[in-house]
Length: 513
Image (tube, rainbow, N blue to C red; front, side, top):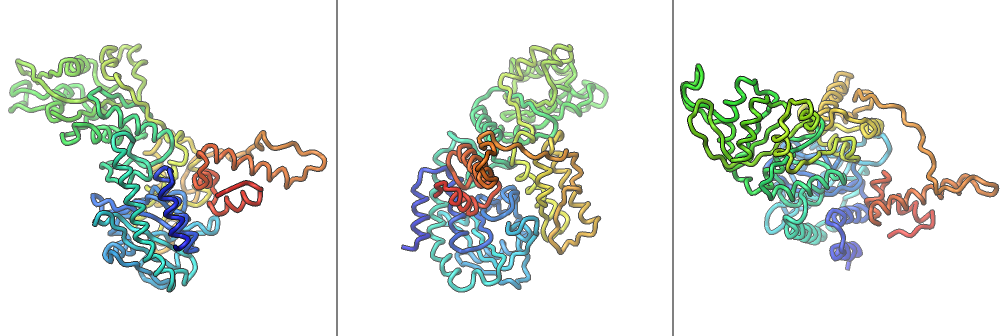
């Protein structure tokens, strides 16, 4: 048996998390073919795009990018030639989606010079594609194509197994992790794999199956509407409407009519009966965004709707029964507003049966780079650029910036930086690199971090090399502990290539797989 076949089969049988298993697979493929990058991308039929599920050798924001098929002719070619390994020569006129994203030389945006890929099928349906890219011409000549042809059935089997496992876990686990994009996800994708986000998604999965009112709490720009949509889509009411009401934009004079409707003749200009937002959401969900801005006069009527399931149109004689679930959201401290007298205490307690705090972007760690990659790809397509990437200094600045405006601010920063790059003379036909200065982020210079407390003091007979080696051992042990012994995850946490981490561990006398 081919050694790579044996390794892949061994990994398929291991009790590893799905994301780790797929990551291990792409790592093995990269080592076997000696190439710069390998990417496993799932097909999203609703958006006609490909989304990375596992990547190796690409920039850290790659998992957050989405690749519309219409914008990437090489990916479109792979999908058209299903079942066939396709190799793109170095002089192919078709642009490569990973130009500038392959990690090879720090800070250097490099072109891909050799590429091959294949469409993957699961249960007779197109699942996605596998791509391999190299910076050296001829990497995939001859034998490489035959090798990949032989490996395709095993790779498809790996995807099929992980997809079945994900489906079986179903309601017991949250949607939203990298590997769980193996199954179709609802509209309004939430990008990120940080522990705070995963805990939130798991909590939403549980509360979605109830009829409880939910109060989403979070700063401006964290994406409360996106999480409200996720709640509705995971609920039993997903087939019914989700009606969005921006309470801050409702004039007090019209708020009652907008929410509850009005009868003919209720006021000047009311020439017909008109249902309100509650009736529009019948059987579904009503999302009250910025609920803290509702006028006091409306709050009492909203409380009645929540308590009794009844509303009364403005000018009508009798109430109407409604079956609506309420999701509310606010960036205000409602408890303080209750104390101030601008928000009813009884309504607050009724809305906050299940409060859900949404973590700000600064607490989501590496998610900022995934989101930056997503917005970079959006702007690449909007501006007609060949490639749009982030410099190392830009990535560092984004990780250290506190993001008071959260995800919305990040989106605007990337869009503005892309325009600045063009205004500074960047050509659309080149690899455009976003530098830290163009982001316009107020980031304080980073001071050198102190050595870990486990580093022995410099004493007679103890060389600087020994001190540095022990500091590296301590850092690797800490990363492995945080990543539950998974070397690939530890490498990403340490911002190292996995193969380089293994080499370093071997030099330091540490055991590695």
